[in-house]
Amino acid sequence: MSDKDFPKNKRNKTAGEVRFVKDKSEGGQWAWSDTGASERKIPHDYNYNPKKRKALAKVLRATSAALGHSLSAYSTFTKIKSADVSPDGCLGGKGYVFKINEIRKAYMNAVEALSAVSDTLYDEVQAPHWSAISRQESPEEKAEVEQIVSDVEEIREDPQEWAEEQEENMELDLPKKTARRKSASRKQSITQRVASRYLAQKHRGEY
Image 1 (cartoon, rainbow, N blue to C red):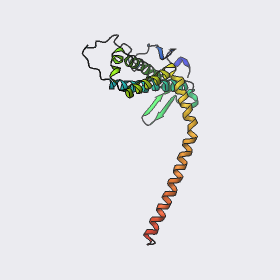
Image 2: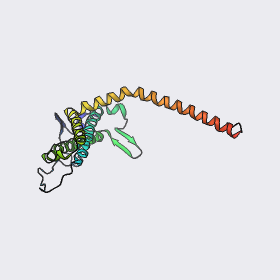
Image 3: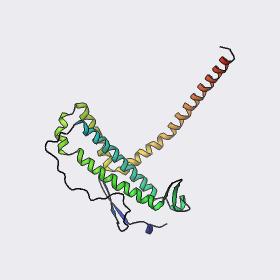
Image 4: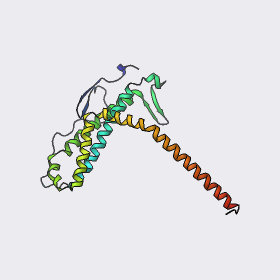
């Protein structure tokens, strides 16, 4: 399976922004339309709740992290040759079968959508109408939102690099987690043996 089998795309990347310039010659290949509204009509008397800014910021952080991990997955997946993992050009089974080229398209869709949503949420959290009421937040709430936004800024500098660092840390922690699970399993096994021995002795009337 060669690159000619897939739609041409070009990834343009700046800080905090990831975009794919799409070849839309094949209709129905994209999960969403990029023809959103260019402006909003916000009533002047709308009562913004300052507590909800934190919720939006948390959604933004999670979305930015998801974008980074999607980019990392897409980058790794596209480096895998189809012939090395599949004899029929597909993956999955029992109702969840995907052609490998369709998985690549799905990842491109996910990245495009997450990038657009992340940009939208970032603009919203930083919008003047939220900044104007931020003074109504308690010092603790304000500090929490500032920390979340700081996390977002770190991710947006390079979402894929951030995600790959997170994944590397998870791999480094894997031996420790495995050792802890084995230790917990041994402790549980000992406890079960002691309990079984006690119940057997109690049944024989030794207690």
